[in-house]
Image (tube, rainbow, N blue to C red):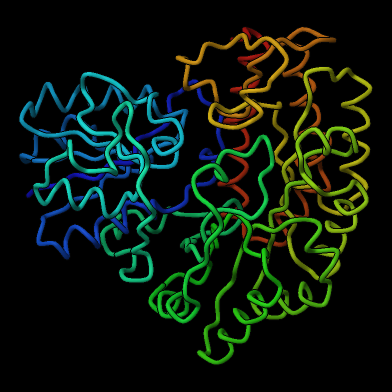
Length: 448
């Protein structure tokens, strides 16, 4: 069978970090490896980077299956692309998978989408392309079906990164150019009420020796560990570092962690800093105890502040996320700016609280949501999907932009970025940030 695997480009109205952060499509690389092992002919199309139009690719050769992956902001775009498949290649079957399809499969119900993969993406896709009956396949969504048990193949096959060779020079994570990605675990032992990814599966880990085998195959020097929480277990983190030494693997790593781990294990943090870890992303979420409790974050304001300083003291970059509430006023934003500037380098993603469909926060959200669910492109955790309580939406967006300019984008941080990273990285990130800035300016002028 001829199969096309597609990662779509976000809708132009979406505000997202892909303006200066494009990670490799790991899920498609896994699928490519599995499908080619089954004897199928597979192409990968990354429309975030590829300059060809989707139509021109569809006209270039016939496909039996066209498979899409994406998040909530891509739902409308995927439906549009699937309709184009049906127009240009009416005999091709269209499939959609990914974390949003697994958690909220009903969003993808559409005449142009033949199959929604809501469980065991690699296994299920291979079964469908091999010719099994979709109606009998438990991994294909249908009303009334029960999800099957999880089938993990990630330790049996590795993602085939050769399939994205034409794009690899463009894959990066913020200030880290030519950056590969790897998963060493799935899910998260914590269940924060706002977090979408933790709804996909329960926490599970890969075999460490297989992780090392995969790392040895990665050509890039920079590796982003995309586990929801790489530091869920101190003993496993230390075993990871020990295995790096035993294999003689020298890489630069970026990973996700939690503030309570950082503060409870400063010796481990120091060990990581000495063994290739350049940066951590931790979810600060808030500088208020009440908001942290509301999110079920299970960390404290003191832990958050201490964690950032421990990371910085060890010479690593700390990226962080912070949520701004519906009831914030100008004084709250001023306090936010003062709080972030208490750190050496407050490189932070500031986002309005977003009750994402599929999370407990969405089901229990007490305020009126004013952005329709069907405007998928606006559910990007950058648009305010609610009406701010103490200011207009224009002013709300203005204060978010002001907070960025006064913290992550101030003169001190720009100088730090330029000194720590080379000029090409600085220019790429700066142009990406400028793009996001002007998207916010449009929202200030005309809120959606």
